[in-house]
Amino acid sequence: MKKEIPEWGKQCKVKMILSGMTLQDVSDITGYSRTYISAVINGRMIVPQETIKRITAALKVSIDND
Picture: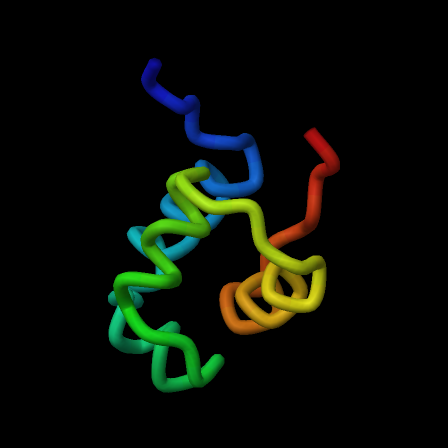
């Protein structure tokens, strides 16, 4: 069964594209690995809210609870 990308993850991807940021840039800001950030944004992992907040702050996107 394929997991759907959460709305928050879609917002993150759009923000990264529009701002020219890479996963490495987000990794450098948050301290998380690129693969971990990718898994979180793509909805492949359930993570603590603190992780979502750190990625959200790095990308300056809003958190939607979906």
